[in-house]
Image (cartoon, rainbow, N blue to C red; front, side):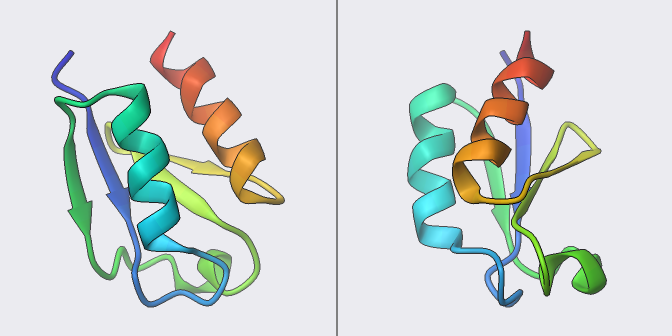
Length: 73
């Protein structure tokens, strides 16, 4: 699939370990980059994933994962 996911391990609203596990389930071959993504304003309030260079934000982690699934389809 050649997907790339970027998640932050610093932002308060993001649980990088949990998101990484869920993203691996969606695409075990994806490149996952963990570190500051420079969207601190959003990450302070809501969880997010950058999917193939597109920011995906949700009100909670499950919503983010559902939006990531939609983005991949």
